[in-house]
Length: 236
Image 1 (cartoon, rainbow, N blue to C red):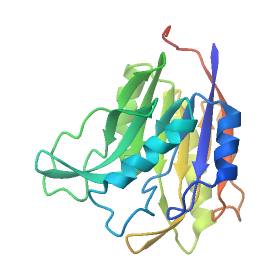
Image 2 (image 1 turned 60 degrees about the vertical axis):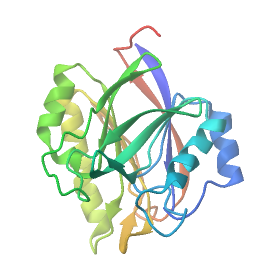
Image 3 (image 1 turned 90 degrees about the vertical axis):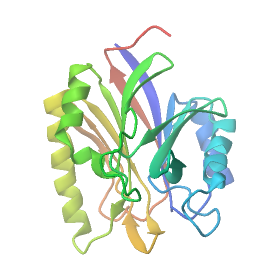
Image 4 (image 1 turned 135 degrees about the vertical axis):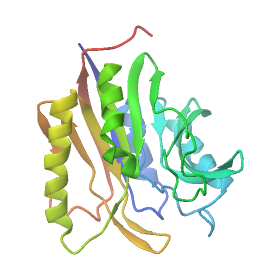
């Protein structure tokens, strides 16, 4: 059994990390830091092909000495446009985790890459957005005995936002129990590409929901550190 530390950074999608938030991240010394989907969106006007998005994530890695996951942005790859979440360590891009069916791509059946990784001796999965709704992916995680899943997400704000969030909690708890997963979801809030998003981050373990936001915290910036217990760790 090992315990890892994970920092959830729930952010306004159009605001950079503040100096106070940076200092808190440095102090925590966590193994992982996860950023929300579509973050950062404050660099430039066009969300597609912006090199500055990756530069902003690499900047986080300058002071967070663990692994940085996310946020996400759109990039060209072999003639298609993919939504990708960078995986960064020591100010270097290690890999991309890609949305499996990119809404920006005209090629619906393109193979958009892996979603199971091994870094720092820890095996984990990464899902982005609606990939979470494909149960076949969970079966693959269970087959590979993966215990840790990061969900990089941002939820569209609805009229029944908190009611929908409570249904989400039930769904995540059920999946965690069924597949033996610690699921950490990081969401951003604010506007992106003409849509309004709600910050509904959470942590679900095989024993149930371990941490969740309150009803009025969907528009709150927060740095939340979680201690996650894993039984399966590869010697680093």
